[in-house]
Length: 217
Image (cartoon, rainbow, N blue to C red; front, side, top):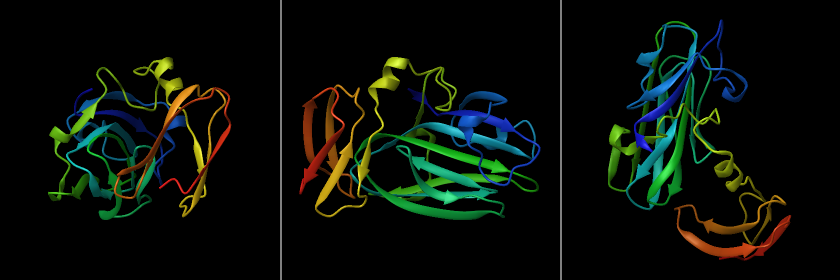
């Protein structure tokens, strides 16, 4: 990682929502110190996908905010946390999540259709009053151009991060975890809403398709 963020920049004839970045090709890619839309080539009908990591100093509950004109979406660890999409004047939306101290994946999608534009991404948490996320807390991939492409990420690292599904969500007394058949050796960690680890188990059962955890706490 390096300080700052990776970005993919897009242009179209018309935007009304944050686009699905996995289906379109960026006009340009690069690195910025923060969520900086000033590197856009024009003032209307453009979009950004900022990707990287945020370093949070301690375990606890964190609130993330986007203030944007027009729409924006914020993801933490691949989970959509803040929905501030659509055509609107400068509007702020927020949501909270429990995080462990350390690095967490963060991405922000943004678009501007016509008229004024603006984007600010802020946070608050243990010992942190609400403030714009400082550049010192953000990290991107060295030489990378965003998570929407595979160029900075090897196939080995992609296959090592398997997507699993858990039902029901949220749960009270049990949870069913579906694991891909090619998972191989793996470790499961269960965290509570404050990001605290409450259950850990290492398993080595290639081909396992499901695991039933009853009262894991």
